[in-house]
Length: 303
Figure 1: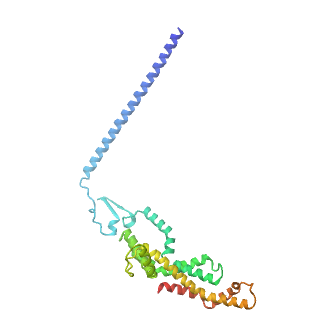
Figure 2: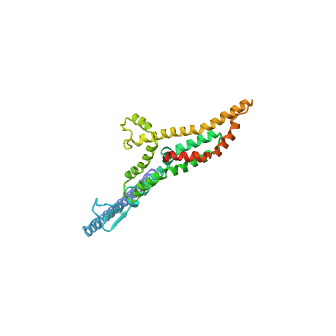
Figure 3: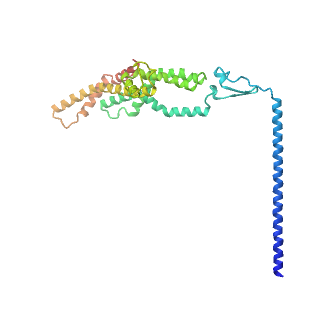
């Protein structure tokens, strides 16, 4: 009897569990049907609204026909409909603000390299370094002062070139009158002209020969920028070392005279540079050396 009662209880429990599962399934199916019916109603309602909107605006037209923009003011406006006008990129319709910021940051990162390799900075800094070495003053003026002097002299020499780049490339590009590629070309032309005038033709000919590019020996347009920049660097190094040698000559004479005097006096243990340095400084000051070096160095770029 006990076994039968246990079996009966188990059957009752199983029936309750089965009824519970059936109820859950029925509820889920009912919710899915309701959701599906609601989605169909929403889709039908949205389609009806869209049809009504299209019927109301079937004569909708753009303000300007495609391809009719002629000026920068026209390019900066994207005319979608007769009641909507979108203005973008502050004028030229090519680059958005985020991309322009990225290009500016990239240019700032590359700017020191361009300043050293494509301007008068290299020659000026090397000549000032030779002048300090010839005076044998070790770290006077310090490197920071020499770099600052070279930087400001570079701005003075390159000011006409930078002004031309600004007026011919930056201003028209901001106004939307030229594209990005044209702005790069207009900005590169004054820099190329400056480097070509300061570069010796033999250096350009050597690099043109290594690049297997024909050149008549005079025309700038035939010289690629990838050839002109290394040619300019080599020419600047040569010019800087020649000027440095000319600065060294009078100071070497002073060293020789002081060494001869010390040898004749039997002071062989006394370093000649220790005695000659005050005479070098005195000669440099009396000759107004810094003015002579800097002014004549700047004239090498202006003539």
